Image (cartoon, rainbow, N blue to C red; front, side):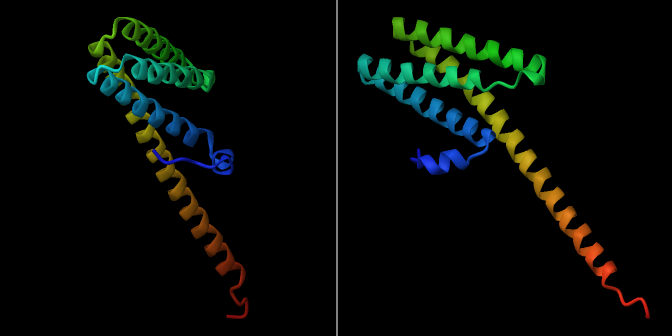
Length: 145
């Protein structure tokens, strides 16, 4: 994963920061699973603690104006957090893979929503440019013609 400067992070939109958190979470969880496979429970523990830290930050960024979706997302984060703790204690790879699948789905949904939003923003900007250009052209039409 790319390392960002403090300035780059401060310039990011909240949606972009959330994307980075999802990416970091997935990377750490995959690393924790690999560490378990290699017989490194200490390394796995360290990465899983990082995963729970990220889940806490994701939970803190939930927009509760979204209604029931926000509540359900919070419940999923809480569920995943509890499963990570349980899997860490029991060194349960299958449980980690379940959490990975859940978070991959949430992450994919987030990226899809961001792409759709970026597309809408791009269309809006092009429409705005077209309207501005049209207005400019109409405003500069020689009245004598």
